[in-house]
Image (cartoon, rainbow, N blue to C red; front, side):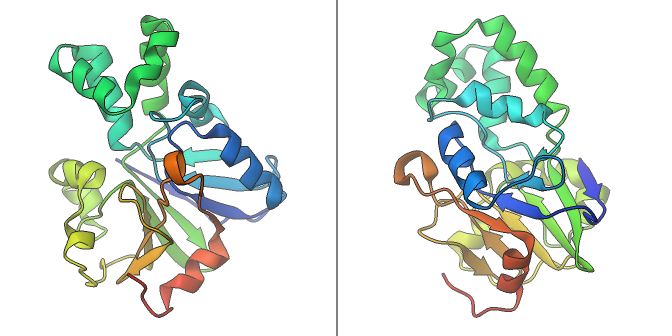
Length: 225
């Protein structure tokens, strides 16, 4: 349900919004910051696939030792479609899964199942003595609930939008900052201690990438949203 990471003593940590198959945008963003694949780590808020031209390549990032993502609703849409078919298949194609037509379905199914083993629902990373959490969509009210009541909160972690729709600035307890994606924003938005960083790269061409220090600076900044 949740994977935890100690502080990176060798390099830097970065957080990136929903990729949606935009491998070229990611590569350009990493090049701009001089990302070192041997020392730095990249944490992704999920939705690696769909709507973009390089969905399979982005899904394969899950196997890279420097890449640490969480699963998004699009990974689960693909899983339901490729494993269960029927209505789930049509739903996935309607939501950006048409790229599957260019690949062998059995190969993609196998790759997806393997990738999901490396994409938990949540991650937590230590940065400069602070704890930064990450889920795709919406965290529970208390961070500890992911471990104690994780099954109950799976849907919200993949699909939830209640907090941002209600402009809820109530902090998530038990964690310093939570970084999420899923809901497209014009620029990073903080509500309480939840930071939204999905700037809709698949249609805006704006992929948000920020280092951990920049993310922590948002923790005490004036909320925007």
